Length: 475
Image 1 (spheres, rainbow, N blue to C red):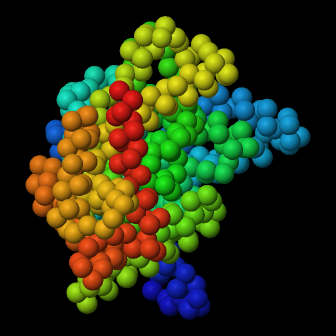
Image 2 (tube, rainbow, N blue to C red):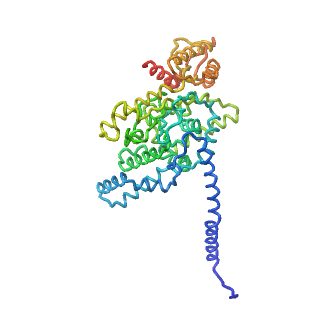
Image 3 (tube, rainbow, N blue to C red):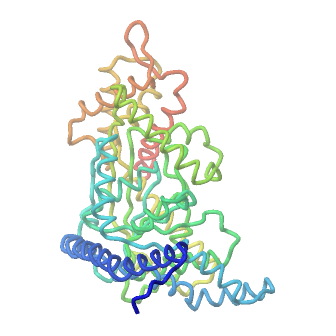
């Protein structure tokens, strides 16, 4: 029993590693999991005490459970059988593809990351560049929603800052779930976004019926489970500064099974955003007739990091300009149940052609509501006035002309994002920002006019106000 046993050094090292792994797995990891689970549960309890829309059970369900529910959903399984027959392969091969899609798509919501870490990052980042304001909230959007209602925030897509802006401003009301594009598939972005409740969407999967069915069923499951959805109505960034033709894929998925006679309603809340300066402005106007998403997530992430790096350097050297105001308005919710009753229709009973036509009508109405509540900001209204002048003007004349446009729009029902902070001072700040950025040129007499090389950019900003004016004139 006391004799010496000799072992090779490699065997001792292996045994030591296995013993260490067992110690970590059985003693340290459970304690770490318990610690973080306790922190998350505290956050859930805290936010549910103050949120207007409580965190639904679906959002708190373990990710693996949601993945299994999606994989073995009856509708998905029917498509699996069809695809296996069409391809002439075994069902197991198609199921491997289904599992891959589900793991890529389904989020893993973490309340601590969303409400503690994510909220603070969004607040810091937005305030580092913008003067952030919640401009207008319709009284119906501020009211308490029925617990059995599915809420969908439908947003115009001016900038990638829309994600942070709307999430930050609505963080005291709901935890929203976004659909993120291919750029979000890059590590570690995908892990962070999944923890914030975002689901990954392959935008170029139009011909893949299996993928589209899985996306449809996931969105329906989340909506029926009470998860507040956030959809960008245009599906991509606006390249002309206006709210453009809606992309109705996700709205169609959400409404496909809607029965107006059922207990659950769907409330579409229009959200209008606007910025005095859009991060991606020059890329957008340079690709006005082309889709540059094909460059991939690494290009998007890399260009974003380079931009942030330049701005940090400019701030350190005292050369960084403020970006002006970032503002969002929340409009009157559209009840799909009331909308359906008015037209005496049932979306769940319609054939495809009739359903698509009806969803197109619904999309046009929601888009119209968004246009009406897009905030009117200083740089866009000044851009419109400067481009509309026949002759240059001094600072006083430009501010007076822009104020007349604001008065006209306000009388027609538009929402002036900077009005309650001082109309004249807001316009003066916007004009200073435009001059500092070189959007205006000044002649020897001190008169201002559009810079020759910046008319396209000025038109991009002016278009948001032009569209609002045209929409309000239709009333």
